[in-house]
Length: 261
Picture 1 (cartoon, rainbow, N blue to C red):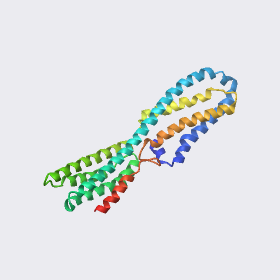
Picture 2: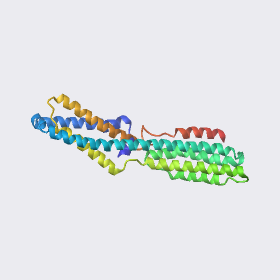
Picture 3: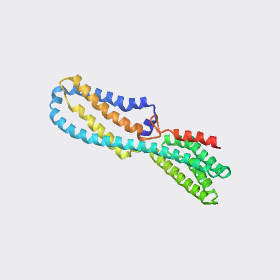
């Protein structure tokens, strides 16, 4: 469900996650106040206020933890994309040291990998999955590197550096594929949504003398909670939707590779 919300335009997700719950909560508050009356609700203010403080603090801790986790995972996705780009650039420069005849197959397979990562892997990750086709392209790159002949110590040093950078690319790709599936477990989503319902439900137990003041305070509370959930949903899938990690680095590296071939 969160993958679907993330893939929608950001204004539509904001409307569903923030605006709609706020309207429902305010309408519910007005309805309860009209049906029950201010006198009955005002009698709960002291007890309900104490319990709401406890519930609010507990939920704020959980929600803040979720925001921090997804932000760190989003940063990890950016770091993985940067690491992958650095590996591609490093291999392209090392392959030039092998000479035209030996290095050309490596550069060709490297360009194929960068192109497939952009055209196939990124759209697949936007759907929360990876691509076996790109895995085969990466295997072909491995084969091209392992086919490099070792005739002297210089060639051996270059081959070792190539394999090190290739391992870095493999690790970076594995990281981004894992993060593409989502970073918040279903159990935590259940806790967050249940906690949001319980926390926001407390606005129905209070009765302020001024209906305008109560509406304003309740609106601020609902908007703040829903905005935090909106942030978690929008960046939970780092490669999906308007707020996502784009393959800008790989595109630049692919342009440079096309000049070398």
